[in-house]
Image 1 (cartoon, helix red, strand yellow):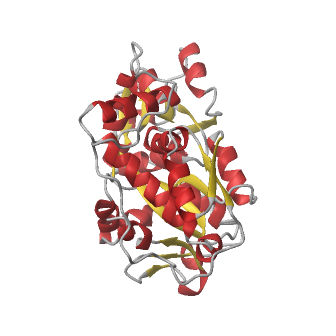
Image 2: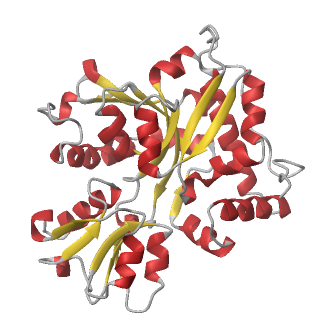
Length: 353
């Protein structure tokens, strides 16, 4: 398929102001960077930006190259942790439990969206979360699915001690649940979740819309890399918001962009649009900046860090939830200010407003 025009009389391109984050930092000798990506509705704009040359245009403008490499989700995080990728698409829970736990100082460059129904608890013959008591529940342990279940049980007066967890790989969880009619409960995410929910006898009893803003989908960069070469941040942010503006364009270009993303996600346009409906996108830089600077972000990160600490995801040697510091754009720090390992940076998004 020939490239879709990124902008041709439709949505306005992103234009950086004269205030460029890190302008005084000398250019790095490094010219090539890698973004580790995985398939998810809220991350498909990155695939589109790569496929259609939008990202290459922004990278060239900054004098660098950015290679987007598609991998399974866990593999993409491993690539980031081991240094095979400079940037990664990841949830807020997993960034705490993997890169940060590994001692990597990480900066959130883009808050892309939060899951607003994309993650679900699905059941056969069980009508409520309370009905899960004593049941086996299939999920990917220590994942966002585990977090969702934990929050659902907590809100219903239960805990994970009241259920039996069955650790199942994400590549086979949907097929196994469909094939084995004796399985009564599963926790997974879209597109698997929506496809399961469409099957007779399977229903959703809880989803991430009931914990809005807690499951964030992010683009993160190693802090050291970003500080050394802010061109990477400018190129990624510029490409991201150009594509998001195009997606909201009501004319043929916007529709073509959505169709291309559906193709890249290996689903129909209707399926992709359905997944977007349960994805709360921060469509413009101002919205993302406002959320990052609001008390809501800090509040929503609290149960996430509590879960990570309880599950020992912050590291076996971490003795307190406050041993790991999270820095926010307003200057506040959650946890130890001398051990900040996760930073929410709005300077690049602000420059794109």
